[in-house]
Length: 201
Image (cartoon, rainbow, N blue to C red; front, top):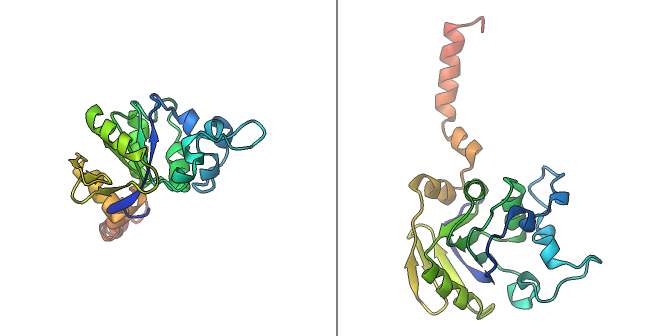
């Protein structure tokens, strides 16, 4: 998993509330178990017409936001089904951070497991970040995970909370497998000891 410590990037404003996982990655794209290749279908039904042409006024189709790395979202982002394909699609597109007033629990947890930082902020802060994002590609925001701060393009700084264990995992690029491998020597020692005590097992 790619490490996350500090990110300065374009923030895309998505004010719609209750953006569910079927909107993030529609069900017809769930056949794959590969974590890559889903970015082109992110928000598919919102980004494209039935004939495959782009919907011009959708935020990620606008020139200023085609390379967004941050989403400033409306309330209850990631609700709906528990598909892990949703964070896969966001990450494959290039999104590393989503900021909202609230997230669905399963989606929130899946983000951390896939290298995306979801940040919960009060509505009044999200409003400031949303307004800043609407300035376009030149209004880059900075997310500093180590300092736990968000800085707007005009220098306003907001602190955010994050679980210490999840912060450790993101900064060090550790998913569940990576965490297990950190204990590799202890696991090897246990297996050798067990093999000696129970050679028949």
